[in-house]
Image (cartoon, rainbow, N blue to C red; front, top):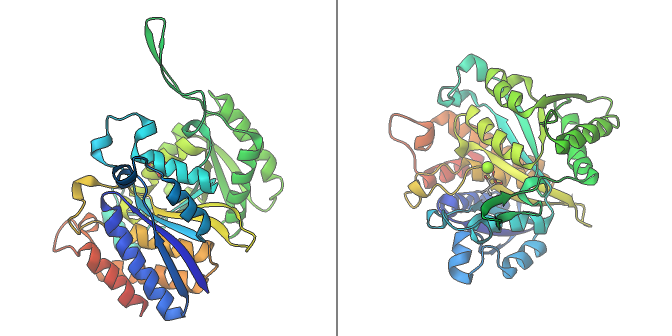
Length: 361
Ligand code: IPM
Ligand code: MG
């Protein structure tokens, strides 16, 4: 198979973890005889430095031409006080919108080798296996009007949370389809006791659920969901929610598994004429400037994102399974970075990447 992949290492630890993810990708391509065509582009802070904009046109062209995009992380502290329009993060929002990847899939599962790394008691977190489906191209992240305005002597900031029925329907269908391949349960999360947006969300999700009579649906308010995630994480199978709630809940979900460095994500849009899903793959973690350049970031979130890419964009289930199994073997072996190993000598980013390749065989 021809795998045309755009790589966007981005900022901070993004470059280091992406290097290991690409190492694994090359290894898989060699082993299963796939032809890998890699291109590389600029996104985020590095793109601002080199081109003056966080999402250069050249990157957009490369992303639209590729079968799938692998991204590291974006964000640099020097932009902390800059308006949203000029920040590295704007590049990420831009590419999500340009590719139309409206469903962000964030699987949260525990590994037996990592139970002690979780902040929760082992018996609470053991067996957790959920996937958060976050709407990614709508809601308050993109709604207009927005801005900081001077308004009759007062300064006012405005953001707009907006959803159409069609936007809610398509991401809901994705969640119900996923649930069919799992434990057949969708929990939709909203704030319908306060927000009209959430009232429409709940109504449309309930209507879509009628197309999937074999899947159970329940609804949780977002504040309650935040609590249930730590009280009883095993109760969740597929969690379906809008953009900002999903952003917040997925960081909370991430630490259940021990470290945010572990979590992969897949952002999926519609199918291409070839039948492949348009996809953008990235670890859930950020650019972690405090540990950048030190060869100590955990690359497993990025490597897990490669597994997700092989499965969703290319339908290569065997290869994806082999990567996931190799990651699990590496976790068992204890060859892990410092975030997963509070004592003893940790492995470097590079050693973890090499260990995953070795475990694939
Ligand atoms: C994420 C990140 C991004 C988001 C930031 C970097 C814009 O937090 O992917 O969860 O809020 O979507
Ligand atoms: Mg986030």
